Amino acid sequence: MIQSLLIANRGEIACRIIRTAREMGIRTVAVYSDADAGALHVRQADEAVHIGPSPARDSYLQGDKVIAAAKAIGAQAIHPGYGFLSENADFAQAVKDAGLIWVGPNPDSIRAMGLKDAAKERMITAGVPVTPGYLGADQSPDRLKAEADAIGYPVLIKAVAGGGGKGMRRVDAAGDFLDALASCQREAAASFGDDRVLIEKYILSPRHIEVQVFGDSFGQVVHLFERDCSLQRRHQKVIEEAPAPGMDEETRQAICAAAVRAAKAVDYVGAGTIEFIADASEGLRADRIWFMEMNTRLQVEHPVTEEITGQDLVEWQLRVASGEPLPCTQDELEIDGWAMEARLYAEDPARGFLPSTGKLQYLLFTADGRIETGVEEGDTISPFYDPMVAKLVVHGRDREEAIDRLATLAACTEIWPVHTNAGFIERAMRDPSFIAGDIDTGFIEKRGTALIPPEEPDDLVWGTAATFALGKAREEDKGLAGFRLNASPRLFVTLDHGGITKTLTDDLILPDATGYTDDERVIVFDRGTAFAFQKAKRGDGGAAGGDGAILAPMPGRVIAVEVAAGDAVTKGQKLLTLEAMKMEHGLVAPFDGTVAELNAEAGAQVQVDTLLARIEKA
Image (cartoon, rainbow, N blue to C red):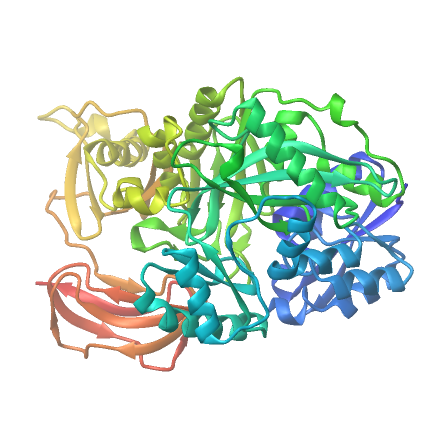
């Protein structure tokens, strides 16, 4: 058995691996960048090694630094987690060449599945059904268009070396094909250094079904059943579940057997996932499910498989890498109940899922569930890496119970001041179509704003804010209340949210409060969404307008300023544009008024919460 393990990753997955390794008595070594010097995975590991500056390309993606760190500290093996170097065949080979144990598949298996066109050819040979399409070497625009015409529109153009939703274009009509092809090839060349593409039939009611497979060095391969990962936003998975809703036993046996054949075709060792696309227009049927690709690593969503099988897949990885056979045979594996996972991201659904970074001043999960995270209260969500705060995982006796538990867990997530998609997750879980299993990869896009939490608090949230503020006021006034000579003691508080001000008194029937307060503001959590109220000084009860402060939502660069000091502006008018995390974010006026203060200029770098402008209410 491996005795010491270096984890070539960070955050949630590093913490996940550390937990299992510790239970197995394995010494763990973390690596970290400048930004992660005090990160949770560094604090949890037995030892830690610094490997470079904050950007991943200068630290976590530097394979030579990772291997050097392992050898210097005496680690016996390297686990890559997922992302970063996990599917880099050259890195895997370098680890083995350095005399270290690689906790993952053989480099040849990674290469065999790394290019989508070659992988599909191999699957056809192995008898695995693949999506109708063109995989040929002739990449001329005329040939590609001719193949698309023959397949029939809509079609999907996909980069051969693509991944993560990049290098993909849907084309609905022949006249749009060449422009879409050129755009896809440019993106593929920029992202992967390879502009080759393949053409596939576009499935109009697609479901994303994947099968967890596992192989050992003795030639054994088993599956651990399927997962449904159809709830996606911009080709990125948001919610996963196991088993797949609507999957009958005959179809399950067919797709899982195909996944095992796919893994055996590349002599697979370790954890892997065979991803399929299903045409769900007539339900899940074995003859309408086709191979897409193989992920030659552990998946982000592996906890739902663990929950329904009772197995620890990281333990399986470490045992197989140590030369042991698989812990279970196929006959010993069975499905128990239903599991769901949601990816809790630091982003603001109300503002187009704008990434949100900064310090987690307040973080609390108040409902039962399995929380897989790489942060604690007081830690920082960095702009350098994926903005996932945690994975919310639940298990139930059936799908209905799992849905209810995940919705409750998301609704009871309390985080401030970083914005999250917890409220979005809760609303997706409560959506009648989702509950009915009427889902495909376009579900989130089709439901649109119905899943977005409101930006404005309702009366219940205002009342909750007053509960906290007045509770504090009562504490402050305990010694003074008896000195009022001509009236019974009565308290009120003036609160402001987004320029809307209300004065609330203590004669209201107020709800139970969920949130917290300090001397300046009240934070209320409602169905996973945080609302911040500024407190005015108690006095005559007059309403004070919001301060109109325009703050930088994250570190970034000001690329355009649309107004000048003294300008009159209207609510929603763009004031300036901030570039951050490779995206442009327009900041707008919160109400009609005048630009009373302007502290931004084009080209300036700003930090989170920097005051860029202040609007004085008309």
